[in-house]
Length: 260
Ligand code: NAD
Image 1: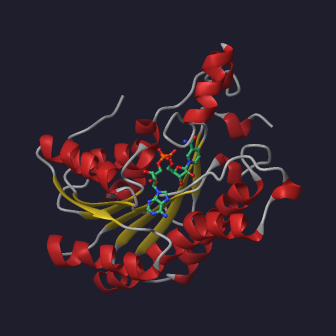
Image 2: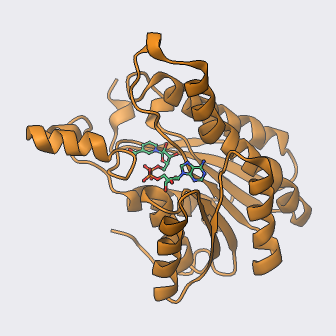
């Protein structure tokens, strides 16, 4: 399914977060196949090392970093690593996120909210904060964030998760405007339901009940998406092919968000 190896990120230096699994792993691998030197970041060291090994096996250039995207010092360090080791920074894909599960409203604590917002919303904010000055100095750069269909419509995720993803959509719109005149583009991709580490419990549960097929029936394409289909949109937004695309959020959901 992936259209790889056309050099669409040839010579670019990219940082991808959440690169140890799912959408982030597929994107880091694809970006490297397309010619980028990648700094792959995840808080799970073994997982991100495994992604790096996959990239190296394909002949790609990668550094793997174990770090928390919600920690400002860590973000500064992995952003600067691209400049120090790969000679610059052209692309950031702020993708890492957590779902937080489906906790009933009355049982949601402030700590639960803060942890989801810290990773899903403040994480991308910190990436934009520290990447954009480097990109602005050179007059170009592309920042892509992973939001979600849950940020576009109700009932697609838990309450703080959905609020964090709606926040990411506002973050890309607003920061694209704040970066007026710098040449730095900021966009979001809004995945529908994709089978990854995050959604494994949903799929496992459906498989156990024999209702797996029904999940995909919710969208007009009548099937579930795969991480590579999100990576393809992230690649487009990261690349110069999207040179006039800025401040937007794109659903990649088989048409789910168009249904009602
Ligand atoms: P995943 O769990 O497979 O991958 C997420 C990765 O992010 C994991 O490797 C995890 O270790 C890492 N991570 C989590 N918190 C981190 C932190 N604080 N610092 C660094 N790394 C951290 O899930 P995924 O589905 O690939 O999720 C990627 C993004 O896509 C998330 O932002 C998620 O909200 C979003 N998303 C996923 C779906 C879906 O259906 N899978 C739908 C919409 C949006």
